[in-house]
Length: 301
Image (cartoon, rainbow, N blue to C red; front, side):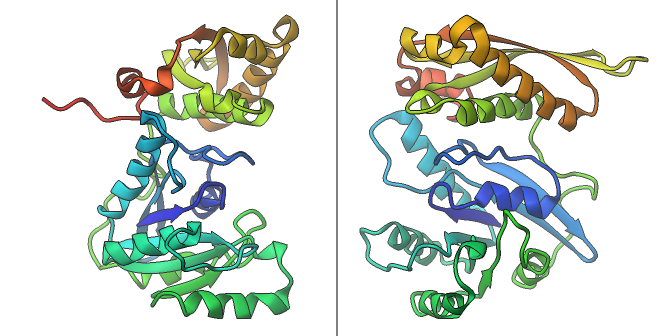
């Protein structure tokens, strides 16, 4: 199934909550997610493979923004169930020009069974919740309308069984101990990029791509396990490089320190993390660069 919604509605937070581990990075800034990320939830008699997708929005010009929307829409065509994730703090709108209207259009065009997950219910007064759910129900024949708070965990425990009822029966696609199909190398790059989003402002997070150039596990099984990671943060302008490094290297050091702690938690061992910043002008406009960083598939032909 696919988790589909506008930027910053909590899809990645919900994915992490459902699988009980952090496989998708989160930040308060929209468009943090750039790739489709698979999370697997296995329980008694059910297994759900959930695709977290980039937020659906009106893309600005440029290959990167187009690729984000295409990744989300492409996921819809590959799944058995579409879960639209919306915020309880925003009223439903059906107009084609509205953001919610774009989501409803995706659901209608897909022809798939559709669930509506109303997130952030902890931010609205309880008397307003039932009228909100009823208003949403009038806009589309949803197979399920489910309120919760992914951040707080409110009412989350019943979502997986409810979704499982809507999915076709079949054998499990993954072993029971698998939580994601993402390689550790890719997850490490994402955890570095998460700290860029959290510790920088304005345009900087959207102008940074993280490339892991070395992921050395040769000492991972030793008496004192260690994984050595070297990553390059690509920016588009020299001024952005200075901002990212910070005075005396302070910001880059802080990004590295907090990212290393998250990576160590993921890998379960000590990590050496080396970060370098490189200027690659206009990388977000270059299809070749986007393929190198994994935001576009391989060129055809």
